[in-house]
Amino acid sequence: MDDHPLFVRGLELLLPVTTDGRAEVVGSTGDAAAAASLISRCLPDLALVDLHMPPPGGIRAVAAIRRTTPRVRVVAMSGSADPAPALEALRAGAEGFLPKTSEPEELLPPLLAILDGWAVLPAALLRAALRPSRTTPVDLDSEERWLLRAISAGRNTVDIAEELHVSERTVKRMTAALLRKLRVTSRAEAAAVAGQAGLLGE
Image (cartoon, rainbow, N blue to C red; front, side, top):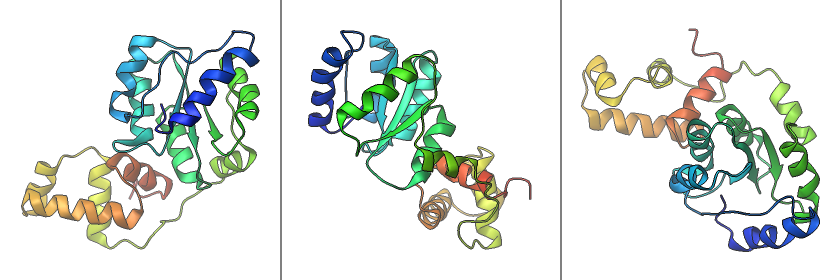
C-alpha cells in the first residue's frame, strides 16, 4: 500500500526477476482506507504499508489489515527517520519495518526473511523499541491528562462531554488541541503515547 507509483512499479518489476518468481506484486493502492479490503480480496502473503499515506494513514491501515486478514504478514515502510510512526506500526501489528530510503534491491533479503517468518527491524529502531520510556513527551495540565486517559480508555465524545459538562463541539476542539500538542494524528496514537509515558495507571 503506497502512494508513490514509481516505488510500487519498481517492486513490480524487480520482485519476480530477483526472487525467481517466488514473489510478485498482486495489488496496490494509495488509499489507506481501501487497504484492508484490497488485502482481503487479494490474500497476499505479505503486505507493504507506507506509513505516510494520506488520512486515515498507514498505521490505521496496518491495524485494519491485522483485524481483517490476520494471517497476512505486514511490513511498515517510511521515508522518515522519525522512529515514532514505525513503533506505532509495530504496536498496531506490523511484523517488520523497512526504510524507504533503501534501494529496491536492498529490500529483497529482509522481505524474503519476513516471508520465512522472521521479524525485521533496522538496528536503530530496535534500540528505540527496547528503550524504556516513562516520561511524558510534553507537559500536560490536569485536564489534558484526564482527557488523554479518557481517550485511551475508548470513551467517546458524548461520554466525555457529559462528564465535563461541556458541548461535544468543545470536546472535539479539546481533543484536536491535545493531538496537536502530542504531535499525533489519531486517538489510537494518543493512547499509545499515554501508555509509553505511564499515564494510564495514574
